[in-house]
Image 1 (spheres, one colour):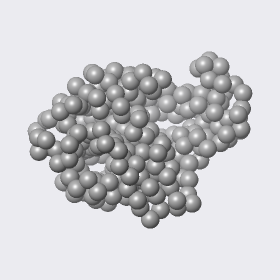
Image 2 (cartoon, rainbow, N blue to C red):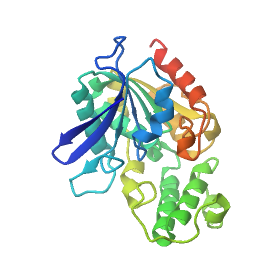
Image 3 (cartoon, helix red, strand yellow):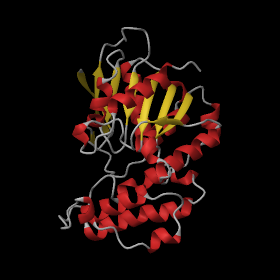
Image 4 (spheres, rainbow, N blue to C red):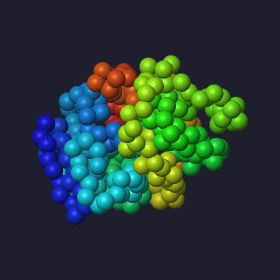
Length: 289
């Protein structure tokens, strides 16, 4: 693995290249992105692709990448511009891409703005709340965990986030009438450390969940787009968003092993099944259009 930095006018991006460039077998690099997950979250998955050159990166303001634009919000279009710059820097596009969670929204923004950058995109559980029939209620539920974090700190915010992302089906009044999630039940801290800059739980995440996909642009792009979700995510909000977007694009989503972070190893604290996940991803990427 080699580590590189890319200087942009308003950010310094750090990215890692696992394998040779140009690639040894002539296949495009496989770029793996997340948000707010940085490159470290793909360690286990990348290890199961020894036959491919894999590129990972830290989004601006996260991990090793520094932003100098004076902003803190995570805006998919801004991150998409950064990924485009990295693809240009490695000089190996169009690339194949695996993008998870908020990173999948960044990837959709990338394909919308730069459709020639990506030949195949596997978008895993994009939290595209705007695609849901209960979009307004889902946005209200997301505001709930941000409000809990702002009022009581990490434990309360994360407990509410887990409650939201575990909820089965549409967000009804039954959801909103439920008692506040207890962080102690999840092994989370009940005390407040006073910190309010968590990229997932704070207002910094609002632009991610407010993203609207440009279906016409995605349909017109030459990119093969594959939506996927984990078998343990069935019925939850990120399965529903994945299925809704797949339906809008006229595709069937792919079922992956494990949960929302099913590609991660023990280093994540909530490991999935990275080996089985990688087998499924290999199959999707190797499938002929």
